[in-house]
Length: 339
Image (cartoon, rainbow, N blue to C red; front, side, top):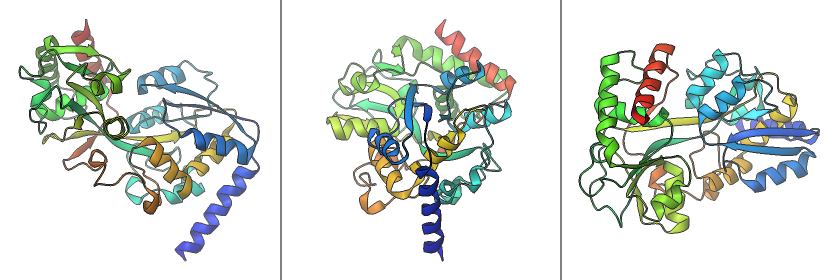
């Protein structure tokens, strides 16, 4: 029965794609989609795909809040899915009724960011933590203490991201402060920690991380699991992704249609196309982040043996959509830190 249902879903997905035409305008994480899949989708459907990239959820939110973005499909992380829904910036596409949704692992269905499964289809997930260059740093990587309260070996050789989202979350994990705290005293602890670290930070940047940490310009960099893994495997960089005992910050990116999109049918066709098991496997092998939809493990490039970064051995706590009061405190922490 399951095989029959899957075949029917696959045929439906292909039928949807086969009749698509026109254009599809994507605004997604930079370098997140396999080029061969873009070409394959264009060939199969006759749809012209235009793709722009961003490097933070904040950039995406700002673009959509401005209105008339012209994009048909975006890729927010879980807490920003919630924000887009709450602000009326996401289109109800009846996601749970798409063939793509039948490919989604049960544990990712009905989550707090889209309880009714009307707006989003999960695309990729992973963690944010820190990576060290082993030619520059020989010490421990089993605690956030080594990163936030660095010893002499790391002082002046640390880099963080340019935005607060996951960095503040990691600091909260280390200090035992709950995500989205509305307590100014708790967030003062986060600020104090980051301010004490600041003299030892070489840069706050989200660009060119692979060259900066892989080439040894810095000894430790806040980064993502799959990016660290690919730089280690593909470039032979002497780096290691930390597994801090306090935990890692989790993220899950989903495909969402912005409110007022012009090419909704093409967007749905692309979601179905990317969630097909064969295509999802190609995407997994390209992107190097865990897949929340079914893939063919016999063709999977990354396994626990060769890619431990993708299979964390510590707890993972996912970023949440904070209340305005809590978000204001996060913004204040980051503003005070960088001023």
